[in-house]
Length: 383
Image (cartoon, rainbow, N blue to C red; front, side):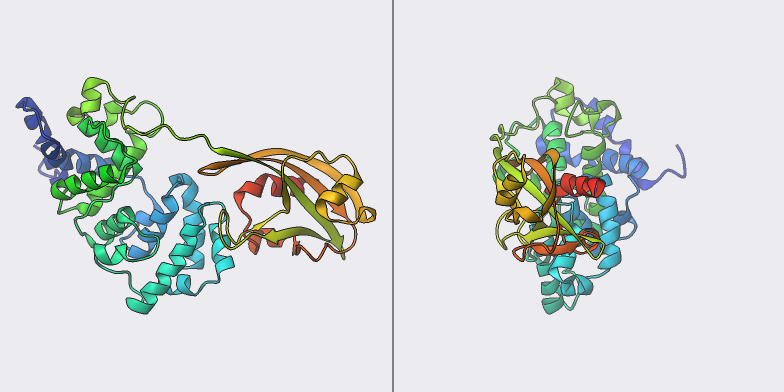
């Protein structure tokens, strides 16, 4: 035996003994057996991520909110930019909403950013600028549910509470061979209860992160799991019975609603500088309070200055060029936008019904959703 073997790796060697006894393990016993192999595997396979460099609750919180619906690699530059601009809760509580939304631009689900600011203000008012140090206290903050509260509490404060997200649900459903619908709140609560009773109480943060990592790297969301690399392989019912394609169980999603739009990139030159027309979206609903290129419902075919004038609300004699920017598609959770875009170049000032933005401000000032990214890029290429 290696005298320098870590305590976590020593735990790993207890797993084969359990399996050799040939006992049919209950779900609780099966979950109780995963800590050793899981933590030993994580010790050698954990990715180096910027929010793992310390146990700062603020950075853990920000990263976990960003990681919802977004890949780890995509989050890294956003996290770095956000933390540079807003390094602590006080800065987040004081930031202007448009600055905050600009920092969040491209991550989507902008209500998450607004909830961050609401929560930061509450922390400043009621907790003296320090994140609550209890699971229940974290749950009281806007935008924080059981998963995020569990992640922050376990990683930052070493509180033994589970953090159950889609990755964890997939791993545990396959491990237990469970056919319960993972989209149901009752299934998640049941699993949270089981994990709370069986998870590693000495290393809860590492335990939760190891489960996240197993789901992200091994028991992957799309395609065949890498069972040969999985620390839980010998305990996994889905692997034993070849059930990975059936698990986890999720109902078939309803088809997304298709909405067609015509996007208008209306621009002019004033004193040699390009300006482009924007408008601010309503304060409620999809992409609330963000800026957008003017657009209309349906896919219009603009082949003349007269048509461009009618659609854009610009005097025909002011129009100098109309160019199709092509088609684009953007997918939201429940709706798809199928778009066609047109560049309408005019002379003189932009109509007062629009926000007249210097094109340089598109990068640094106005939060413009990714739905319009294709047309922002096309405009910069054609101007």
